[in-house]
Length: 184
Image 1 (cartoon, rainbow, N blue to C red):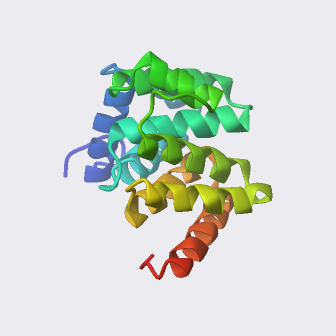
Image 2 (image 1 turned 90 degrees about the vertical axis):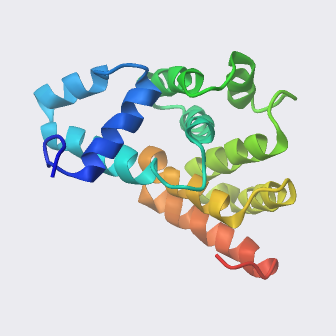
Image 3 (image 1 turned 120 degrees about the horizontal axis):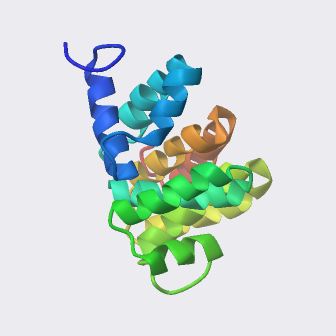
């Protein structure tokens, strides 16, 4: 096996994705984590980027739009928001698209991108927005999004808002899928 600290394919895959998002062969976050918390650095690379970010249903560009939306909605992760704002640009988003995600309004994004950002932000915000989250899951599907895109958007929130937010988001998506008789 090749790879980083764990010698695995997940690490290699995750590091390649993190480098693309960071726009650097040596992302600064890894330097900080290597010095202070190497296990957290390994989890970041293997799990967040090597597993969660590597899913097939969303492009890296759309994942970064979702990350920006979630971090902006949370309002408590300024350094990570700055990183993902740049990451969105590094993965093909325009400044106008990023600005629209931050503002939560505009007409630059296509309907699927807009609803992915909304689903991400509402999932990160938590259960008080469940009815609104369900409305945006419906809108994402109405815009041509797939159930897999819905689920991967919500799963991505594990990295930004935690498992409870993602679990509650998946429950909302499952409700919508059941209403539409869609497989989840």
